[in-house]
Amino acid sequence: MRLSWHALLLSFALSLLAFLLFPIYFPSLRLNFFAPFIILVCYRMDFAKSLLIAFAIGSLKDLYCIETRMGLYAFIYCLTTYFLWNRRQTFFEDQPITLPLMTLFFSIIAFIIEWLLHPLLGRNVPFTLPLLITDLLFFPLLDAIYAWLFFDICLNYTLNRLLPTTYSYQRRRRRR
Image (cartoon, rainbow, N blue to C red; front, top):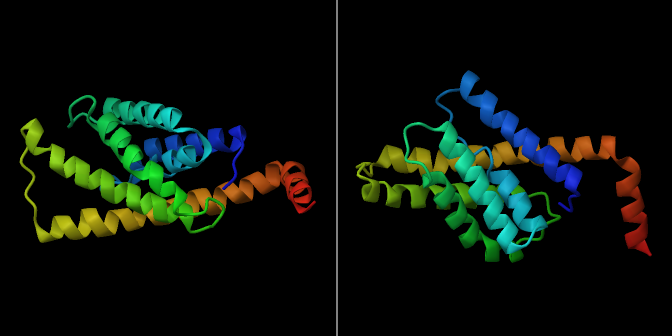
């Protein structure tokens, strides 16, 4: 998962495209479209920049969502990034399972924070078994599959096609 700035911009464009198009075709599918990008940013940048980008992406989601208060997702994404920042050392960044697994953790932590904040904002969300199954298991697993398909497979394939000389040069340089 060693990414250049081009790959980071490409992953942001992919997240933004999925964020804008998926709800049109699949309105009941509630994925964290920017979660893989935030995880990639956590591995690529330092803590302050990761929090700033998580805040910006959360603010973008706040602007797009009309049913929540402004700043809710920005706060949730910043808090989730804060919790996951030290966990990024647990998983090696060049393993193919890292991004889907960290996306799964991101989704679970973000849901728990959102569920805990709703009573503070005056919304009562009942804690039921179907809610637990769908929002703590099903949708985070879909987020992990989304991260694996769109970011691990598509991004690696695209980068190897677009920039084959750069990555082959880096591989040759590491062997020495």
